[in-house]
Amino acid sequence: MSAKRLIVCGGNGFLGSRICKYGVSRGWEVTSISRSGEPKWSAVTSSSTPPPWAQKVTWERADILRPATYSPLLKDADFVVHTLGILLEADYKNVLRGQESPLAGLRKAFAPAPASRAGNPLERNVKDDEDIRPPESADQLTYETMNRDSAIMLAKEAASQNASAFAYISAAGGAPVLPSRYIITKREAESTIASEFPRMRGVFIRSPFLYDSSRPITVGMAAMTGAGALFNGATRGVLGGFMGAAGIKPLKVDIVAEAVVEALGDPAVKGPIEVPEIEELANKAWRKNML
Image (cartoon, rainbow, N blue to C red; front, side, top):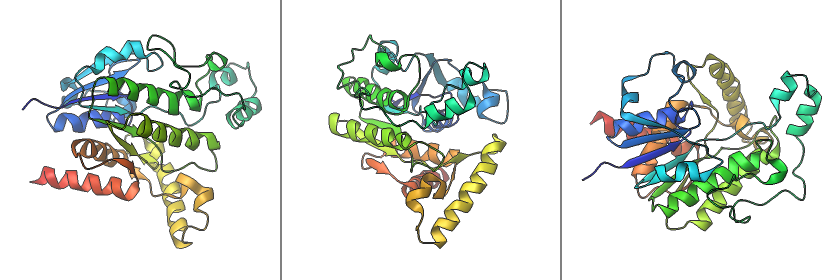
């Protein structure tokens, strides 16, 4: 039996690189697709030296906003994963350059979606050789573009290549510090992928906040999120709707990565995967490795 072929878009990132690692550990043929190719290892691990498993990954470059640049790389893929997304869409570069005030940047980040905001790329009939961004937002990465449209177009390409499963890294919820469009676009991506590509098994990983000691700042933030989760549990979720992901137990990034690979390899797993199920999948994978 030939090895399964796994494609990870955003495979050089914090979570994506670990999904690649666990794919390799299964004996799968793994390809990462990103704009910059192989990771800057000090940014995703505690060392600047590539880990041994990295030699077994094919590090490709492509633009997620232009399907024609990555569609040939999906040929014969069994599993495709989308790990990309943004938390805020304010133009930090203009703020840092002094071309835009910090207040204006925050206003832009929390501005409601205009009534004329374009639909997803399937509704707009975006072609494979076109940039998926609508003209009115071509100069900015929006929630609609990164959290929703890039995933939908990747799923379309994966389905056209007869991939058996597609994993989308969604989110457990929003947060008081994030605009509502963050989680709205995540849920829109889930819904569209599930309805438009029913023959391809959709796995929607509703991830909480992720942390790892290789990124010390995430450990401190996870501690605060963990405190929020304890409070949410003690109050029986009375503020759960307000707190969103800030009131949900954070997880170590490796747990989510291992769960993604386990979910892809199990034909029975599909649909939204919440935090308890993520932990269960990771534990199942761990038990397999112990045998």
